[in-house]
Length: 463
Image (cartoon, rainbow, N blue to C red; front, side, top):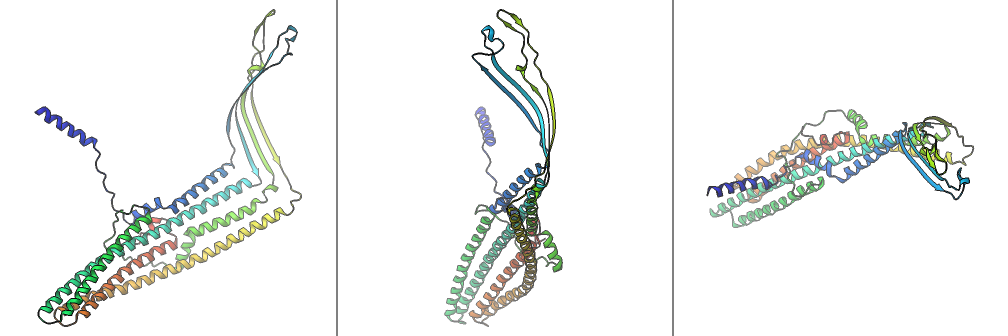
């Protein structure tokens, strides 16, 4: 019996360690976690990162062309042939095979020290393209953070709408109970009970719709960040109300012109256009190329070892040579085209047109940034003023609904007046949440307009 019990305990212990434990559910995502998840899964951001990696690879290749190369070479050549006649032993009726073998080992370098600045221009152009791609990636990340924040606060707003709808249902149920009590004592007519029932059913339908809208908002948020629809989110209980920014408008515009990624990208494109125009004249400048090599060459067939020849005995041969070598070389050339049939002038005209277009795009972007910052700051100030107004309106609406319910229970007002007071209070509460969401979204848009570099810092408006 003890043996069986011991064996059972052993099997249970083995099963405990062998059977994998159930996967723990992922913790709910807060706003920063949602943005971080979106940055790793959003197709637009991933495409921008891929474009940046491609431009970095091109820049690394073009930049490497400015420096001398270094290559090691191992080479072996072998050939063998045999003719019908000829050779030093032809008079003896012997044919001599033609054998050639050579082994080569060398280290060589080749450096185009100057090719009319073409290599330097191409490297600088590739570098500017890298900067433009990096700015585009940052801009995509900032826009993504702004979109995720808007979807996040919309989910919070819909969650609050469910809470308000549930409170309204409770309020309408209390009015229905009061109407029934008033009918029993003959204070009101039976039509009040019917109206109260209608209002209670309407509030029930509103609650059902609000719950569906809240579920849709959470799924839309999950879809925006690239997560499964059933992803859990740690939505805040109360929305923060940070103070409005106090930085002057001129300082915000200057900060945006220095920090905005689209401005940096436009400036990089201007630099690229200028370099493209300069590269057209690179073929009119001297070109200097340096080369060097060091190695060893061995040809086993250049000498012959001692061999036995029939009728002559042992014939001595020459020793195999293994000479080492080194080479240094410099080549400078200067080519001056005499006639190009207007192709160079046309190339300059096209390059300068591209430069003018890039400068115009930069000026337009700078003007757009100034307008964007102005409107974003005005939006924050407006949303903050509306928030203060809605906060006071909500306080008064809730107090009015509470008093109206007491008055109806005591027969001082009609059911219609009590229901109207509740609807006014409910509308004011919804407007307050909407004002808080609008204020937070306005702050996020302002941070995006100013060009906050870190995408996570864009959404930290409650700090």
